[in-house]
Length: 337
Image (cartoon, rainbow, N blue to C red):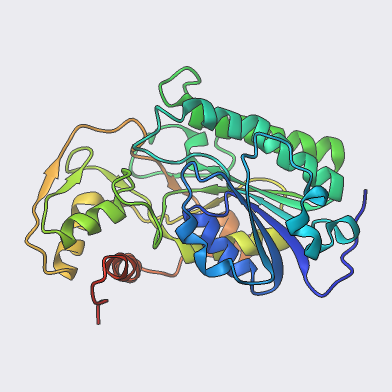
């Protein structure tokens, strides 16, 4: 059913919209769209969207996307006149992402990447909406070396029976599903392969590295790196990630695009920067690697740069300052000057 936008703003659905990246995406989309935010709070947080709840162009629906949803039957969405206008865009970020609770969330994770994504794709088919699926660099498998950059054409290698396969193989299967829906139904689909993203609203004490480092430094306690002195990774600030996301949605690119920083950042040096910024008395310690916190590869972002005119512009230092200010504010402390 081809639905035509007949009002001044398009209707946009964000699945996983109360999460870290999803809530920032809602902030950006609300400027020019009517936003429907779906989340079941498995790893999202209502506080991330509190400031949007009073906006007449925003509506939150508590919902697990592994269950089908009929938007036209929800009384709270009558104001968006979906029966006439339909949906114009769908952004699917819904998937548990807590490193701390990864084992507990194995089944919900694989269901989100299968049943959940299917339900979002079915909505896209129903309304002929553009849909963007948020994939991950985990589709390439573990980092092979510290020098090479991973291209979208690299197939990678994922152990589909490993302890973390529900997330890694789930993301690969999800991309397969998106591509097959595109081929069969002619969907205008987009796949964004995110490398590590950080910034305000990341949960504390969840194994998310940057916010935990900052929190420990604020408390003058040890910054614990899950690995050794050589642990390094890619870190992209959330606003850069969203710039790429919106550019990709407006493009005609249906194949996956790498989005992330191509700079290899050593975690020990990152901790040293954070300690210096905060004039903290913390030291740095090393611990056993965690299942869901691994050294992932670095992206080749040539495709994004040449086709979207995108590259990350927020330096680690500036990104850390913004993230530190957010955490200090959440603790009732003064922000950095």
